[in-house]
Image 1 (cartoon, one colour):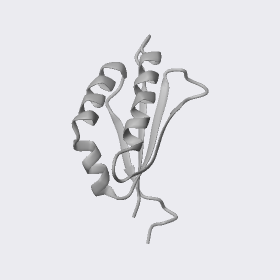
Image 2 (image 1 turned 135 degrees about the horizontal axis):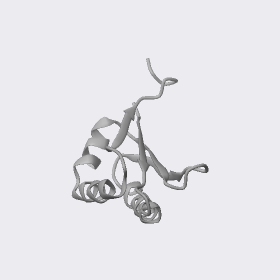
Image 3 (image 1 turned 120 degrees about the vertical axis):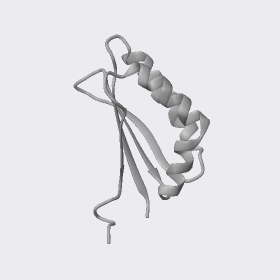
Image 4 (image 1 turned 90 degrees about the vertical axis):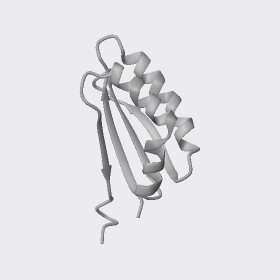
Length: 99
């Protein structure tokens, strides 16, 4: 069953553009990972400092591989210096596909 991952990022003051670039750079890299079915990043239309990542994985095992690679670790280290809140990532299953 596919795993849907949502991540929310609110940039610190004056870090919005740097965060936007970091998220945009992450897209192409993650899309090429095994088990990644889709991945995109989004910016809020009402808050220039608010961003989201939505990704779809073949299953939780595929996401776990992604979560454990060095590139993801470096990305998270960089992100945490740019956001004004604790990391906010949710692993979810589709309610329409649930048994």
